[in-house]
Length: 224
Image (cartoon, rainbow, N blue to C red):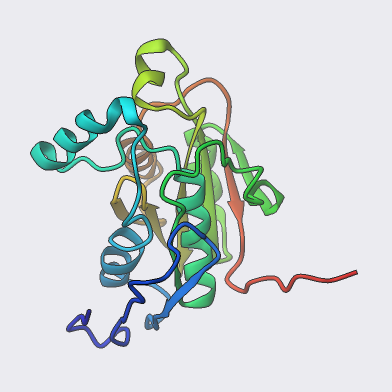
């Protein structure tokens, strides 16, 4: 599979690879300046959650949502694995695919909550933190879900997890499970930044939004 874009080299996928393993390294990519719209669309959105699966009870609804309205991720339970795979891909420039179902795998299990906590609070507090932050962030955003019966039927996890990558005063909001993203200038007026975050994040359940930073260099594991 080749893309006519000089920002990263041609991508070749191993069709026999075990895509259920989120740590499996499938292919090398090379993005200029770390990240850009083409890289986000063709790698982080299109490939990270290529094999995501909804829970059985929502399989038909998920199919209709995708085919009729272009809405992805309905009924899927692997947002933590998607977010962790985006972090790993950005760090290593090697594509990591999310576990297709990852039922029960949450932010704690995948080590996300062991990352550096940058912010914990409301959307307004998140906007302030991002605007004041001077350091590039390879971040994971943990969002509490509404647990009412009507909402939880379509969203079968207690948290939704996506990514925030900031580079040179630009924030890239990335949701690889739902295949959506947007770019925001962190020097924009505060109210505009808040509205952009609200539009991207959507409905929030009880509790605080948490932003964790994994950094751009993968930490080496130590063996005792």
